[in-house]
Image (cartoon, rainbow, N blue to C red; front, side, top):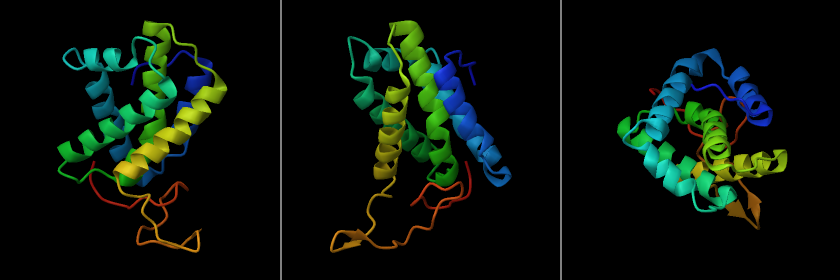
Length: 162
């Protein structure tokens, strides 16, 4: 992973990285590596630059990028990628995108922005994985078929693989 220099982003990524359970570490690291390659290799970096350029609303664009990227990685893994590890990898990858926006595009990153983009990124990825479809009765969410995710993020399905 490229070194993050922004202290806000560095702290957010480090907090998540420190919580990765040993049984998820290999999958998590593989997802981070694949996500970094997807975002920053020479043949695809222009898409990231274009998506974030021209005054893009980072609070909308970054969650969309995270969701699309995670689904691409999931499909490339033949749907064997660990959803638990993927949900954890959202924040470090998101921080890399925000660092890029800050350095390459002069975007201003605030703690409030990071908090909002983090929440919206989790929501967008969960929606793409179908984890937002838990049943409700009279507006109260009922336990769905998805178990609680390791690490405390609700609703993710555990799967093996990368």
